[in-house]
Length: 262
Image 1 (cartoon, rainbow, N blue to C red):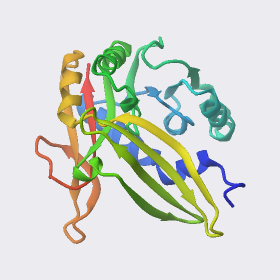
Image 2 (spheres, rainbow, N blue to C red):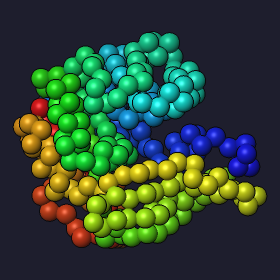
Image 3 (cartoon, helix red, strand yellow):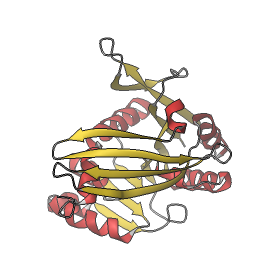
Image 4 (spheres, one colour):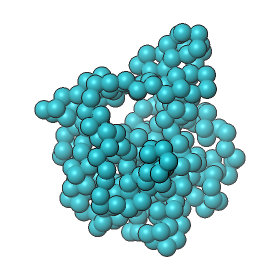
């Protein structure tokens, strides 16, 4: 089963929820600006699934996906863009470029999700990216990104999640508390006992939320907002609803969103 499996398809099924991300970005932009955004740039776009979600929602919506990896962009063109109606497909542009150096038309929304920006391990490099993203926004633009943390984020551990037909394993292989560097892997296990080890590997620096906020401020954004997940009263787990907050819970593991207004 592992030999027949497609790692990109498995990633989309187990990691991405573009419907939820679209709703959050669309609703948050509208709540801040009072109207809908129509132009999106998805940095570190991978298979460009969010670009496709965005372009398919409204006839006026356009999307640009930026990624440096030609293999994943090619997969996205075939498996995601190829499934769209011609009108939506024409409103998407994919660019194989560096997200810091790329030059695109001003976008109302730029997003950097799935923590991909954490591949920039040096502060000056990440700050340069944030400045570049701000410069690439339209005058009414908003930059969206996510972050994760909690004391479990610093541990060397594995977490398993069962899905239909496979099991997703997130492994935090190593963490260096002196530099903040961490190595993570995604593995997939299958019912026939076969395995796809290290389907994806990430060499990141685990930036803290205060560091990210400070760099966004330093990059020149006018207002930075953190959106914290609410808690389900019955289960005690996250309820999937993210609201502006200045007070977070000291959970063992958390994920939040940020918006940075130009």
